[in-house]
Image (cartoon, rainbow, N blue to C red; front, side, top):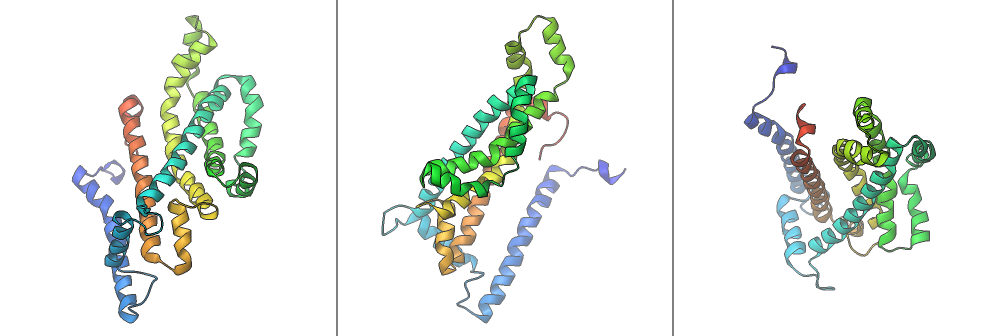
Length: 273
């Protein structure tokens, strides 16, 4: 049997999946030990014990200045902004993307602008957002929307266009109106694509969020990372990066699990990543 047809068992798949993480931890541990042996005051690669002690303090000891538990207050602020950005982007993708996929006139109207707008580097729009929306939450949420909404709109529109024409023709034969075709044929078939677009948009959404928080914010995971970088506080920066990665991973897995539960028919053809 060819290797392309070999599939690992569940235990082997878990082992192979964990192997790169174990290797990364091992490599870091060795490199950190070497640097700290040469210079105990080295800040570049702090020991795991140092990072654990620092993060425990930030998670379970109130800050002396404001009384907040910094890790949790930063996490709540960032997730609030991320959530609002994803909700607005999802709403725009459904409204505009479905219209583009269903109505040729809407496609002719929106497609050129959406395609052009999606090519604008979102970071370059950040100063404009700060000038027009101020330095508050609106600009940070707006950057996420500007960054991922156009991509989600195009993905959803293409999914609607790719629906087999036979399904639409059958609905038309049965006398369905445009609205009924949209709600009963198009929408159910493209909802899995919406979840996929959200999953793909998670990574750039986090990038835009951290960028906005780094420039103008008083709390948030990105704000904290760029605040302590001037002190070379890698015992905070590295755990925060790992924490953001874990949050993004959990968000991605939650969306995948929801997709499998809600649209099991979409996942029958093969494994989902």
